[in-house]
Image (cartoon, rainbow, N blue to C red; front, side):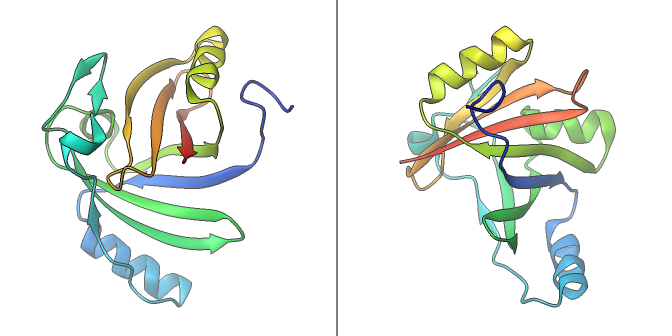
Length: 153
């Protein structure tokens, strides 16, 4: 097992943006690929989003994904203006690198390991499809970004 979460394989890099349509068109042109669809984060009845330990039924975002390598995605996130780790990042830092993500198994165990390492879980929920879950750990102080754990079912 490698490191705190048992893997060192990055599956995703994500940017928080103000205008997802503009940025995804620019990235598509830069990468020479088709412009991806924009999707929302899903309905709270499925996601059960929790932000800073409290239910957050209004927290949501728009997302677009580019496959940029074997098993790696570039994700663009446009928050909806409601408190979330995405919106707070945008408000405090502006657009830019939000997180790097790792695929894991046993989410609760991995969150505990990250907390023992000094990373606090600030947001958690299920994918909008219900096919997995995510957790954001705040690594901004020491790792200079959030760490996202992704567990697909």
